[in-house]
Every structure is written in structure tokens, then in C-alpha cells.
Length: 228
Length: 78
Image (cartoon, rainbow over all chains, first blue to last red; front, top):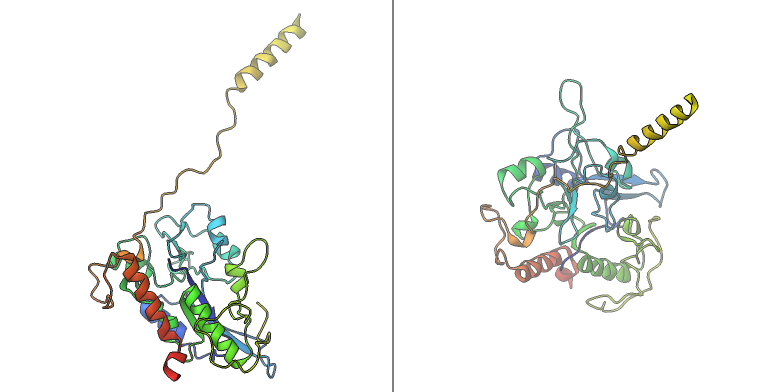
């Protein structure tokens, strides 16, 4: 069973914002709501500036699920954290709990009233019928049910953003890290997919077996990039 | 005598108020709807990718893993 995860390879992200654009276009997300955005860390510091594409990471132990007073969140078999907008009351607790700032609130209407929460669905829609108009209007396209992966990751030009089965994308990143010898620290991995006893092992560490095995690793991976 | 009456009255009030005990504060069942799993597909959706069988979990899993490899550019360069 696939366990859906995101990885953003900060060594590759060029801050083109095409993931943001793809997401907004695919799901017809309203103005003021950004399910995905690109964040720059160490801005202006020569050699240390990195860009990361951030959205809901579909955490293993999602804090939003824990704090929701109306219990509108649920997790699918594939590990995707979704929510029911018909149950959401727009209280904003999830937005305070989320370490990634994923929950977004449209402020439309006469007095800018905060609406129902909106966030990345891993292109998996919501509880409405798969592929229906109702699902599209509330949650956007359901690409997983179409046998596809999130568009942000699929169309990333440098393949900095990886999205899909956690084992597969971890192998892809690990292979890269071994070949280039740096950039094994993945932003948010431990926070999103770690355990209570300690963070999860970084997917890019060379101690774990890479599949397929790299042809000729030039150098062991150093801990480059930024802190997770 | 009055003192006994007051004590008796207070005791009676205590007994009566005991009926107004704490209400259960456990959360009730959620009202959220059940969702169909992704492998069940989207029957009325014209944009479903070809090459897998809707409703077949193994077929969907293979499709996702195969599609995931499109994000591995080493497959193209090697």
C-alpha cells in the first residue's frame, strides 16, 4: 500500500513557482488561497540561499487532526490527510497547529468573513463522489482516482518537488544524494513523518539501501542544505 | 430546632442537586462523510489515465509506482 509523501529537494528548487501556478490552475483555487507556495530561506546570504516548495505534508501524526474541534479531518488508506468542508466551521485551530502553515482560509464576502478551511489534498479530492462536479468545486481535481500523481510534483521542471509513494520518492532522492554527494537533509521530513521518540530517518541518507543501487558513488553524502 | 431544620434543608438540597451530575463530555461521532478510496477510480471522469483497472487496488498501486518513476530523471539520462 502506497504511503503518499512529498519531498522538496532544496538543492534543485529554482523558485520558478510553477508548482504554485499548476496547483492553482488545476484546482481553480480562488484568489487569496495558496495551497502551495515557495519559501526562500537564508534570503540574500551568498551560498546559503535555498528555496523550498511548501504545502500540506500529509503528516503521519497530523496536528490539525488532533486539534479540530469538529473532527472534520480523516486520513485515507494511502496516508493522505483530507477534510470534509461540510463539517468544517472555519475556526482556524488547524492553522495554528500546522507547522507548515498549510491551512488556508478564503476571506470572501461583505465583511471578509473567514470561510471554510482549504488546503492541499494531494490531488485526492474530498469525501464527495470521486471525479464529480461537487468534489471539484469544493476540493479540486481528484488526480489520484484518475491514476495520476499531484500535478505540482509531476510538472516540476527540475524535479525538485517529488510527490508520491514515500518509498519510491525516497529512493529517487537517495540516489541523487549519493551521486551528487550533498543535500541529503530534507526540509520538514522529520516534522511531518517523524515519530514521537525522534525524527524519522532522512530519506537522503546513504546508510539506507538505495534502489536501484547507484552505479559509482563518487562521494558519501554530506549533510548539506538547511536544517529540517 | 431551627438549626436542625436548616441543616436538614441543606442536606436535602445536596441530595437533590446530586441528580444534576456532570454530563458526559466525550466527543460524539463525527458528521463527516465517508470517502471512496482512490483505487476505486472515478467512473464518470473522462480524464482517467489509461493503463490500469479502476477498482483494482494492485493495478492502481502499480500505476502509481510506474508513474512515480517519471519523476526520476536518471531513468532518462542513464
